[in-house]
Image 1 (tube, rainbow, N blue to C red):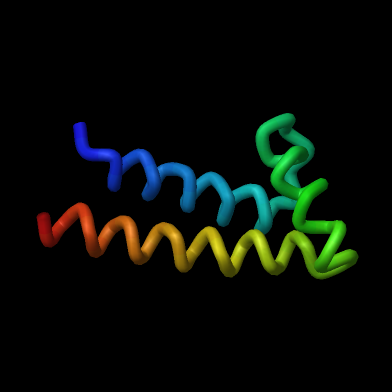
Image 2: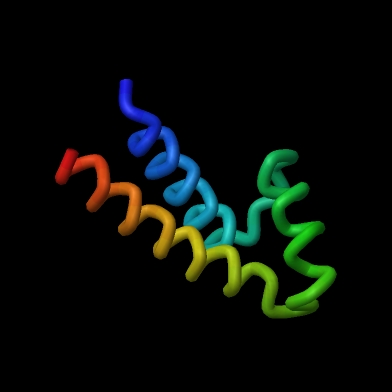
Length: 64
């Protein structure tokens, strides 16, 4: 199994958590760190960065 697919899954999880403003523990820890810098925009930041991570990892997984 390629690690790119694991990164893709993490990106999808970040996107889902940001879009739904999840309170699940793994997302909670990501949000806690992001909210130190981004304050109220932390969910939006994690959603956008999750999309970016997903796209890059998908591209890398499909080209290798």
